[in-house]
Length: 309
Ligand code: RIB
Image (cartoon, rainbow, N blue to C red; front, side):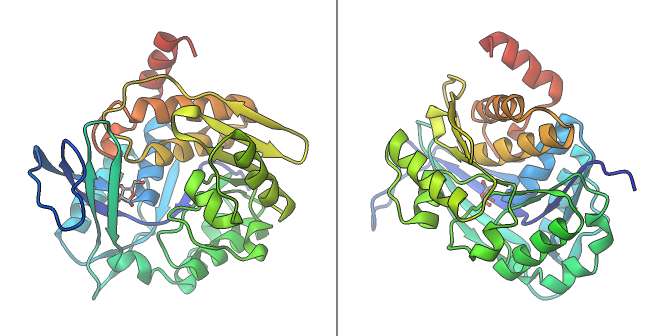
C-alpha cells in the first residue's frame, strides 16, 4: 500500500477570543478591546496547518450535533482537510475555548472539552484501516488519554511515524512514550512529564534527555522565542526561533506540529523539518486567531526569504 499524508486524531473547539491590555487579577473586572470567534482546537489547528501547506490530511474527531460543528467542519474543509471520519455525538456540545490575548500576544486559555472527551478507543478502532495508509500520525492530549494510547498503538502496528504533542500536559504512561517517534512538549509540559523545572537551556536538555531515556526517539522541546531544542540518543541541538513581533501566540505550538508533520511526511531531513516548523510557528504568531493564522506554503516561503531563514 502507498503511504501518504497525515492522519490527525484529536480535538476541535470554537475559540472565543477577547483582546485585553493586560490579564485581569483574580476577582478583578477589566474591559476587553474586542471579541471574535475563530475555529480552533489543537487537533483541528494542526490538521488545518498541515493541509494549508499542501499535504493530504485526514481528521478524526468528535463534535456535537450543533451549529458550532458546522462552522468548524467548514473551516477544516476549506483548508482541504478530509473529514469523512468525523463522528457526531448526539448529547455533548462541540468543544469551546475561552481565550484572552494581551498586548504582548501572550494568551490564557480555558477549554470546555464537550464532545472531544467522548472520542473513545472504539471510535479509532472503527477507522483502523486509515492508519495503514498514513505516513505520519499526529496526536495531542485534548481527547481521552486511553484514546490517544489506542491511536498510538495503531500507528505503531501500521508502521506510521508518530508525533505526539503532549498538550495540555498530563503524566503519560511509559508504554505510550516508547511508541513515540517525535514528542513535542513546551517548557511547562516537559516539566510536567519529567518533574524537572525547565528554566534554561541546561534544564531543558536534562528534561529532554530523561524522556529519551524513557524510550521517546526524538524530543523537540519548544522554547517559545528561544526556538526548539532537539534531543535524541546521539545529539542535543538548539534551532533558533524566527525573530518576529508577536500579535497572538495562540496555536504557535499547533503551527509547529502541523508543519513538522508536513515536512516529515514528505521525507524531509529532520534538521530541515525543524527549521521549517520554526518558521511556520513564527509566521503564525504574527496573526490573530488559531486556524486563520496558518500560512500556505507560498506564504511561509516568502516569510523565510524575508527573514533570510
Ligand atoms: O493550541 C491552541 C488551541 O488550544 C486553541 O485553538 C484552543 O481551542 C485550545 O485547544
